[in-house]
Length: 170
Image (cartoon, rainbow, N blue to C red; front, side):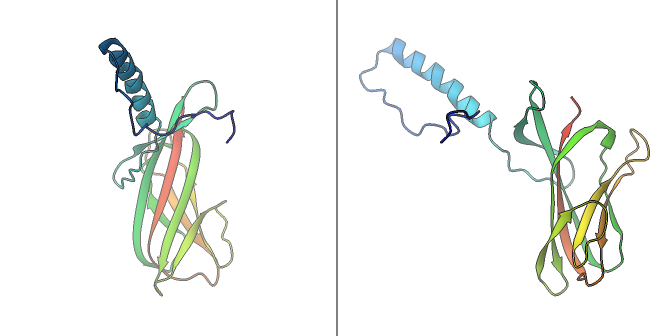
């Protein structure tokens, strides 16, 4: 393991050795352990994937010396979808977002196969389904879309999910 890591203690200790400890040492140990526990909990990834509103993802990003957290939301859709481009309203003000950090998707076809949905350039890729995040018409206007694109020989979509994670402007 590298000695130059940010999180040198990612886990909470599972045991304490408090035998033969006087009360002052016990209080000092509990104070120190509380800080360690709080740090371990506060620096975890939060596994909440809501569909109706964004959730803090628990990751810390340092583009500058200031810590920024990621925000995540999922978007589900049902088919069959055979006509493209297919658009899903994202209800985000893209003018407040500094970076998209993770964008991914998964799709079930009408033949019940599962395939990936690629976060791409907005251009169709032969045999693949891609998606792009399309901006709002103006700041504060929540009319932006997630646009799914296909190319010839792309299977018909039964259902799918898109996951967007982003960092807000500082």
